[in-house]
Image 1 (cartoon, rainbow, N blue to C red):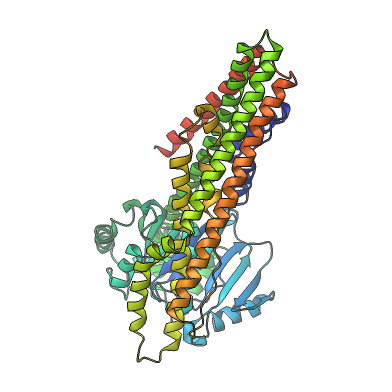
Image 2: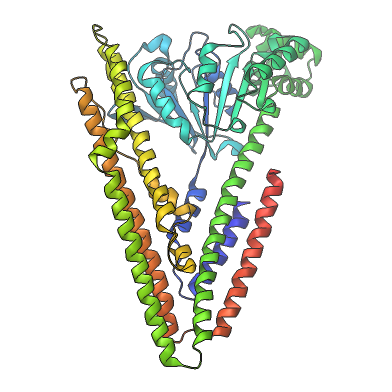
Amino acid sequence: MKEKVFQRYQDYQGYMKQFGIEEEEELRQEKRDIENRRFMVMIVGEAKSGKSSFIDAYLKTDVLPIDVKQCTNALIHIRHSERMFLEIHRGEQSYHLEEEEEIRDFLNREANFSKSGKRGELELFLFYPLEKEFQEITWIDSPGVNAEGGLGRISEEYLPSVNAIIFVKSLYGQALESTSFIDFFRGKTKRRHKESRFLLLTGSSLFSKQDRESLEKDAKEKYGDYISSEKIIALDSKLKLFWNACQDLSEEEIEQKIREEEFDSATVLWYQAKGKKDVFMRSLLEKSNFPYLEETLKMFAKDYEKILCLQFLENIQEAYQKQILIFEDQRQTLMEHRKDPVALQASLDAKRKEIQDLSQKIETGVQKLYEKFVQDDFLEAILEKHYQAWKEELSSFQGKRNWEALELWFQEKMKESSKLSLEISEKMIEECQEKLFNDGRKIYLEIFKPNRMDYEVIKADKVRGDFFQISEMLSSLKGHLKANMKRNLENCLYKFTGKMHANCNRLEYACEELMNQQWNSENLRIKMEEISEKISILEKQKEEILWELKL
């Protein structure tokens, strides 16, 4: 899929280069993003729900600590590498381990609430030789959904950037419905499409087929508003772990292992298989239900890539259509003055002035809107509601000497302020689009107007995430937020006007081409037809992707 789409992009590059037309930088960047993008899956669940067991079972890593008392005390990123090593980030400190025994000891000791206690924020990057089908995916093992303090905050920060979230819930020892789990769906992931969520009900081998199907049905009724029913899957990590462990064992060694481990579910399957390894291994895998999960995840990953490719094709098509507008304008000018070079020169001079005037007008309009948005009174009015809410929240800390909770509260408010700052800059850009592109020659307005791709780049600047010390007062929080907003609005102004200059230069260059007699009307007609053919090819490929996605 990617290769076919990139071929269309190469066609576009070649076409633009052939005629000395500057390629859109945003398209280059979008291609790089698709090429380098890693598919990210976050595993979440309540404490002791079996998240790490699931990951070890699924990825065949056999490295995460999964004893019965274990509870993950860190955010663990798992990525493919030819060799195994561990990067450790604790606060400002970073170091790495390369010996397998050291890594296992560290994970068992430090990434484990039951053994490490609470030692602050810990983020780990485990590089491991994964099997081929998992090598392009980053897996994130997170603390429980009810993790307190910094650990929970770190997990939440990754939620917007992951492509899929797998919720793991144990069928054994945990109620099927829990308040913290439903709150997590409604709160932390409410903006995420239900198709990108999976719910895995682990420990299914402990139940009869009838009971398991009944529990699965209940889960679909309880969580169906948040997760598609086909992505609510009952499975058994222990059976899959046992399957992993038996891969290279003989029938005699498997029988010995079953006697030693006293794993009832595996024992039953072994005797049903009458001691035949191939039958036993098929039964283990089938009972674990991991093949169904793997197929469902693969389909989702493929569809996600298709959506990215579809967007890329649409942006290439938009770039072509802009060029058609320029060619159209050039051809019309030539047709009007083809027999009078003096009149042609005068027309091109007038066009150049019109383009420059329009560019200046838009730039002045953007500047005025920016000045409106950065006024203290304007920002104060926006902030007042948030300020009062924060004041009420802060009053709850009076008389309590819970400094750690207060510091976490300040950090949380800083995250909120960053989101609010981005919303304000987005509002300014939307107002620019609404007010500044409705007066002027349509063909030039279409060229000047930032496209969808441009808007994502213009509005997506990150603001600084400085954290407050407890000694700072609420007024400082408000003042800092205003400064963040102004800084982000200034970034938007700079990017927006930069795009206007680039578009102005493009139109002026088109005038230069006609002055230098690089085109004639017949050549331009042929070029417009060529681009139209390329757009037809893009449309066909888009239709194929939409059909595959069944949209």
